[in-house]
Length: 301
Image (tube, rainbow, N blue to C red; front, side, top):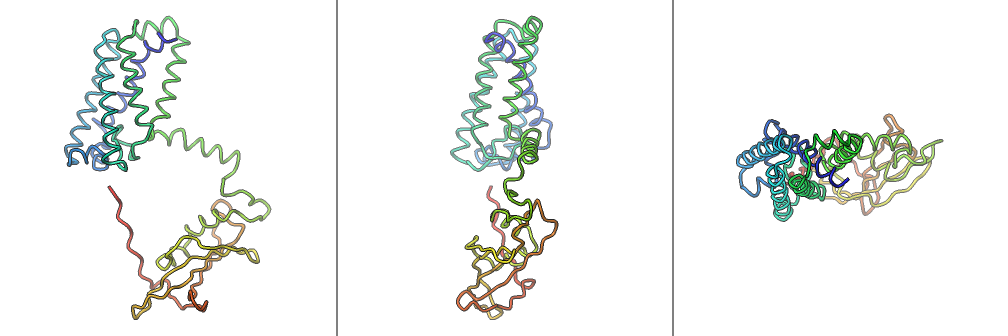
């Protein structure tokens, strides 16, 4: 089995490098994602980062062609192992100087560098070393052991797919949807027969309501307290209301929603909102439509 894996390593690597190389060289994602990558921070230029990504993509495509066409030569495998080592060094540096940035490994993934990027680069290094020392061409192995070859290539494909964050929409999201169909939504537990839903489900419903959009400029805290009464669930937040004369008035913002409703069970449930003085508990006449929205925080990176 070890010799079969070594002989088929060029095929798996060629698929991986051909895919990532084509995305970098021909795809529009390289130019779009370059400013968000750690490479742009290292080079202090998005334009130079795009050029490096394009050049890396070309190198990956050439290595993919070499791995497929000349599997008996150690040069494509050795060069691939060297590329994997360079990837590992780059990722380690990226984690130090820009941990929140993406690596640009596929020119499509905008997620920060995680262990999966390191694992994939390590597989490129190990696969390149295996390809450089393979004792037989991959087509010979496929012809002599077709069943074992299919199993090895399938396992390699599953592993590489699991280590590619930008492929999650093809396998992880359908898997999660299937799990929810079989076992139910984690926030929808206990909704059958009109039973109350978890508080987290009510908060999620509230934060997607028009009442929250209207009152959010006044709200200054997370959820402070909650209680149920007569089929309603009340959610308490602290707030700050700036009156017309410029005086800031501490208030409490109370929302009321159906205690049995969630985003999965309700069509358009009513949400009530009240603003009361934090000290006296007296209602405050606030025209929520006239409250100035708060400035949004800038996006880092």
